[in-house]
Length: 450
Image (cartoon, rainbow, N blue to C red; front, top):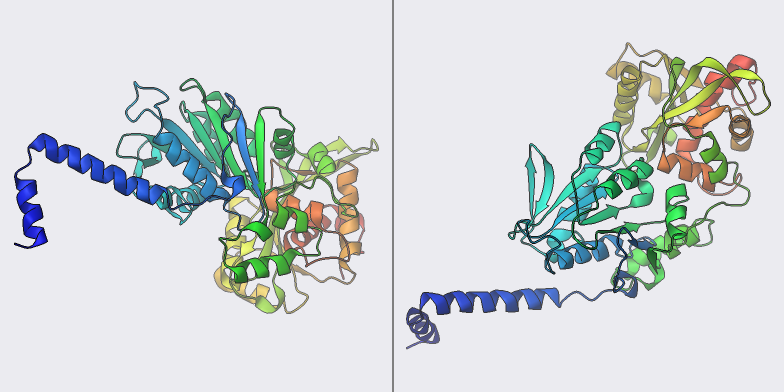
């Protein structure tokens, strides 16, 4: 008789109750073995206690496993005591990311997401939304924080016992996400937040770090030994010696950078929650040199000129400028022009304007092939970047230009670029072209353009 035959015989002789107990023991051993494989960094270890409506905030450099730490915590939370025994599975949670797609990819399906720690997690989309669900019935509803529709979904998002905010500093509507999710944190005796983010100079994030009920752990890229050495070396090479090193490698929150033309305080002073009626709207493009490819970032900014005449900081009545949207990203020339044309129609814009230095002549040809109905114009930089940017920065200083809601990636470039240092800031450049076209060129300030 073989070992397998002997095992079959022993199993055949067991009662249904004994078989069920054996299955449960084997399942528990398999789970314990899998669970024990994970070795956390010190900054991925949650505090022993998080206050009610308080936070555990992971601030980390690139590649430090911030998402991994929060996913582990949420799985552990699900497998712990029920927050409300009346609920199936005992837990109703929320995951909020910059977009709902980010929540799906990074927080659930990705290698550092929930499935990486608990393969039983299933992603389900129903009429009520998209959920990560466990066999027990516990669930986490997935939200974005990008559009007004996202805010409305959060407003009606239901009650939760735990909220995970992924890449919080990159959320376009971070303030609204915090406000509306907190209103629903009311299940169980200890509802609270966990959050993971690379720090950026966001007012909401700075305020969180100053609260007494927020526990912060911080990870450095240099110490992320689970990350392959080659990847660490390239990240360190990219940021070492720059003004962004402390933020991108060490997870430190930098509020203002000396020498930058914009700072967080000034942007917050000019920020508005909604744009007034516009008299003119432009879509500005700062292209990658010579057309680029999907690995090059293209700057695409939508800005408008307000209809009303409003006093500026000096008391002069003038039309104010509004930065409405940031559609920049890594894309091919065709994708860039398609996105610009879509923005032109979606915003009811009057003009697409693009810089044609460094081989930008491809823009007009590509744009007309995609949509010949777009009204298109070019600008050519005849002066240096500082000369172009300073007049626009001055308009912000006069409180006559405004960021509508929040545009985190653009604002990061504005508050971290120091003239004469670093890479060409594509989003910043596109914004400068847009506001120059709307506010400076009509007034005779042609220093920035040929």
